[in-house]
Image 1 (tube, rainbow, N blue to C red):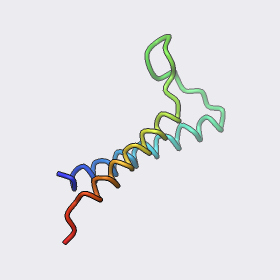
Image 2 (spheres, rainbow, N blue to C red):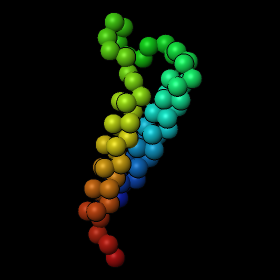
Image 3 (cartoon, rainbow, N blue to C red):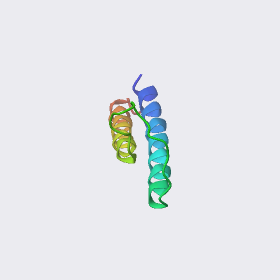
Image 4 (tube, one colour):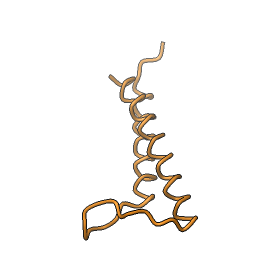
Length: 70
């Protein structure tokens, strides 16, 4: 189970990192995308994806540490 969590956390972290970099590059190029999120609410920013990436990478590391080494 820990091995599956480690792999899933790694891939989700990688996807979130790529999305955060894309959104950050678009922001640096001053490209305005339609607002993501609830209408009238707070927009989802690239920082949300960076924080999610950190969370998923930490999940992957913690799961890897719990796997039995042979």
